[in-house]
Length: 362
Length: 246
Image: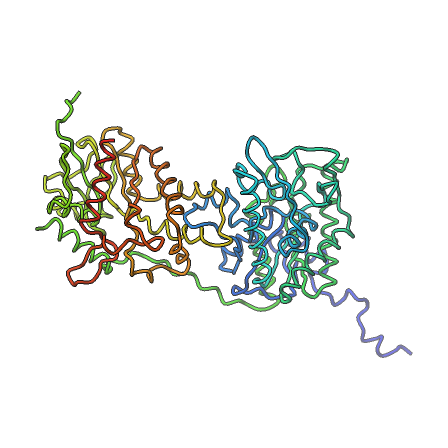
């Protein structure tokens, strides 16, 4: 006689799974633009939240898209007033939440945080090229470098203050991981933003060593950075993403394509593992949306590196759609009213008119 | 080739801020022994917006022609640099206060440091954003008249509450801070063929305000926070004439 319980149970664990769990119904039968439910967010992101974006270059798209939809993207290092939008971009204001430039690796993120919160001293190394001075940890932050080494240090101190502000005052920290390959200082172990001698600095094989971060190292660095940030803001929640942008070049000895896949796969594994381990860490699959096979590389520009605006738009559409699917609709943020010149005369206008009549109408 | 004029002609162009210069000349608060004739051209604040730059000339829209003719008094409907030896752009809505106060405020903040390259770029970005500056640049490019620019003055002391929290650090700005900004603006203007005359330092108080003694008193007896009196006008005209003959 058959067991009653066995009779009522599904034939196997897959029977009751939703359509998204199957390749055929979740992917193959759909247009790339109709693939939904890629993300089950852990936290609700609301327009009133302060959101920090940092990391590899793809993070700047996320920040811009959030701000564009009226969400509270946190600019912790705002540009001086009167700098034009084009020049803000040239000088890397408003690109990320602070002027660190790209933070490609977990180790670099940890470094910045440890410098900002005084865990370790900031290295004094400055690069010089053609009479201009460059910050080894953000060499492209000013288009032509700085006037002096002193300027490099003072400007970096402003950025470190902005980093502290960002961590202490924000609700969400979005970090886009970019690379596993890096260049480090052989003696002190700190990591450069890029290989010395490329943009500035002078490469010295005795002083500068290549390092390709392994899974365990990345996990340790990212955990340390998160722990440090949470020690200054225990409510801070983290959203990890992986940059879909391939490596420009590899120094690991192999082909740049296999190096890219190795690098991104490692980072993807770290992000997944951390999100699985930590209640306050989530992973958002922007990487899959750009690089996944259903999307047939359609969001890459002809160089097969840069991501097109359409790709960024689809990523962010997914972000907001999945937020809504999990937590319900969000009341659209109020748009700032545009101040228009009215036909009415202001008090100062009346004063101006009187001044003119007084001088010229007599 | 036209013969050089024995008497030079200086046109004072601007908005309501040209009023104090007119009074200073009429009431002889300012005199000069130079062979220099002054002429005025412009319109007050709201009407100033209806003056258009056409090529290197300024042309009024029909609705402000009457005001322009009243100000000019010589029937000159169009402001053309070829008709003058010099044109002074007086204030002309180039509002130095709007530019100086946030910058001076930032310069006083512990984390307000900006590189010299950024500082120079801010100055470079701001000047051409002013419509009158673009007009001055277009006129200077004709290499006919000398083009001189005196931006608006800072708000009168006593009106500090007009400044927002993001500007109040400017109250502690030093003469060196102001000079750094003026020097850069002057350099940029010079590159565009324009002589920029900063607000005279002796008229400044509280970091970014204008001393009361240079202010205009309105008919009601209240202090006008923006316009200046003939005393200020005389001081400025002295600098303009010196600049023109230097």
